[in-house]
Image (cartoon, rainbow, N blue to C red):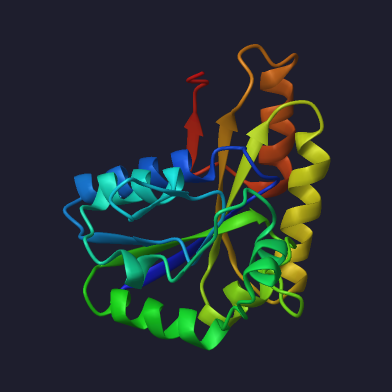
Length: 207
């Protein structure tokens, strides 16, 4: 059975997928087989051939080479809105047990499985569940991606506190530079290290 991780972030658009790909490449360089899962993806497009496309899913597939998209991404929606809104508009009830079954299928085929959430830790997944409940259902340690910009210390510490309060293990964090020239970057990083320990990765700004 694979070692699994759940990757979340301090916000949306702070580089969860970018960080996930970096982790996948890191583990692959160690000789491990790695699969990814994006249980819920909104903001999809329908291509001329009728297939669905989501940028995050496509980047994960490019990194892992997965071909069974239904297994890695069981729920996909067109509008680029919070998953609980997209699911409600589509008349779909997101089933955590189904997602867990899909995860087990992936875990039987790899050394590591990385599950990427949508939005932040408490982002609603459905009218009854949040991303937190999905991580609890999967019983996975959590990796927190911190978008390094003004306000990141408060966002990171609140998210870390919520992860631990939910009874989940905070396995590590990633410092991802989302702005080119953050004022007092080194000081912000040092403060986060004081509270969260050394980051698993420190990623440069890539535009």
